[in-house]
Image (cartoon, rainbow, N blue to C red; front, top):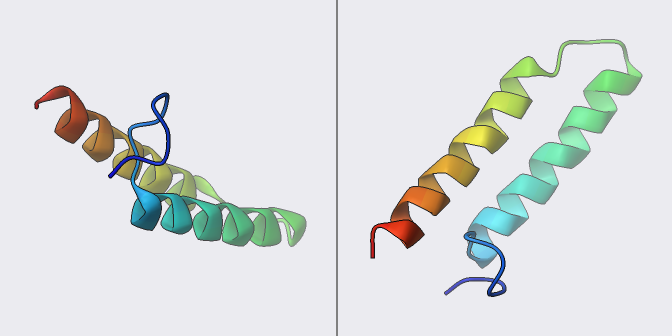
Length: 55
């Protein structure tokens, strides 16, 4: 079930994205690379969009 009509992500994916965003900000504040976390968020969003548009 989608979170809203405008988003493709469900509740589980939204929680993952929020957690990854928190981790990303923490790493960025320490001056470390955030590319891996950004890529993971992009993968989650792409998978959700593919699932919802493929229906």
